Length: 404
Image (tube, rainbow, N blue to C red):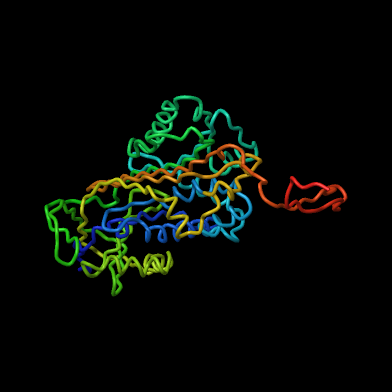
């Protein structure tokens, strides 16, 4: 007689934390980048809106920012490296190249996972060949010339939205409502996932879903009994629900707090430990016959304040500052800055499968006109021989109307 564990719904409204799609592409030389993506995602989750369903794709956001970082320099690059966990990591681009290939390698009738990258470039702007080559070689990104700044750019908005919608199987729509005419380029990553359960749910009935310790709603609750990897702590039960994903080995990790109102406390502890505690639970899980009940759900999510989160909580400041941004690796000059980072996602879970999609976009803009420098108060001057590196003359001007 096999052991059996009954797991019933005890999940807070903050569904995203209790349901994590875990991609097993973290082995070998991808480990450092994969770990940095996982840790970034957990830290970002902490600053997502509370009291509502949320889903994010740390992979999508990290990929879009890695494409941007390829052209960053100085303190701008240092801040992005630090925020995304890339400081000291050797050959970040090579690791993203391998990861991108691995993530996009699965496709079939029961499993489909693809990731796509693209750079939309304004007709007036010519990025460095070295930069576009890096995007192509390491992110399989193509470059598309469009009109951002000449008259009506609504066709460009529609073109970009249509591409994102196509690459996400219609799940991410209207990513842009409008695009500023001062835009030089937009970097976009998309990821799409559609996979059947290895053990489909066999029964669905209306049951209570507890929003907290007292309140509940009635929802469609799916049930299946099968052998799952399982682990239990004082704080939570952890179940890995596998997909028909072939060699990719992908599961949904369900982290179910032991108390109905315990998700927020659990989330804080796990975020504090970054990904290490989840990895420990996964590694220590064991096979057990489980009667699992899981709600059907479907929702979309949008992070409209991702720029502000990156500035306030991750220390990514210079790239958004018109005066301080160093994206000279893109244009050859310090004439660009990032105005916006957008992230949208979608997930649908039913008896047979999970369908999920996300897109992340980084909007790069020209500095608006030349830097205005007005010498309208006392100043110092130096006449300098650049070749011989010697000061020939120097002085100060207190009042330009006073002569000898």
